[in-house]
Image 1 (cartoon, rainbow over the protein chains, first blue to last red):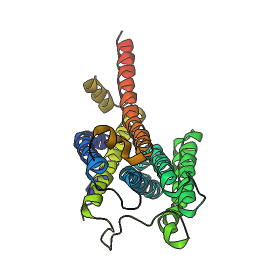
Image 2: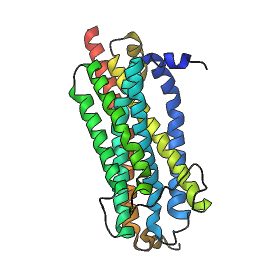
Image 3: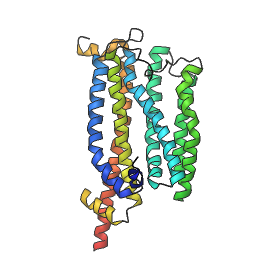
Image 4: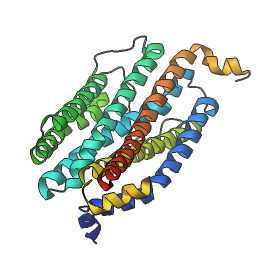
Length: 247
Length: 55
């Protein structure tokens, strides 16, 4: 395997150039996937025979919850890269992804609560899935607070990385909470090994919005990371040139 | 699915569905607009600083 890309990632300038080329494509993908997926899900997908129209919240709830959890796994991976290879860009990624992950968790919790009212008769129950998602939100808050609390950049990077890795234990708890405990929450919509229990015209729009949320996450993350790289390197020649061009 | 008001009422589930979508849209938009504004601010601040240095 060719590892040269991994070493190039250590160069902020290389990252800035390549991400600038990717960004428009991810932006276009976001608009198309979310646009088609949401219109299809809201107006053309059939009603659920038990939940009626309230199930249409699934087209934003499930993608947000998936991205919230994937984002946390990415934080932990970035934390390991920070600790092992001392790669600065991994620390930038960790810092910039944490607020997006927190917002995604927020969306999952709020849309879930709104969906719960007509379906379960209550906005909130302290069951395993909901509680472990709330813990995920608090983990994100902890990482954001810690990353801003220490002024020494190396110490801050290390502490934040360790917290991100330790918090990873919560992810399998969220994933299997619907199988391990009795819960009001319905089981997973997508499984890798089985076909979805929904008809195609229900899950295809969901697949589109899931991909759309990942694309939007990438757009937001790249924008934040590019900004952070510019701030950290603002004294260098290439940043001056880049800002000159951006004007 | 017939008339437009019927479509938006969603058989009584309308308020739930639309509020969930509205909140989600606002949060997603915030996550893109905020770094974009910050980038524009950085560009203008740096430009002003350089102009001051050049004088």
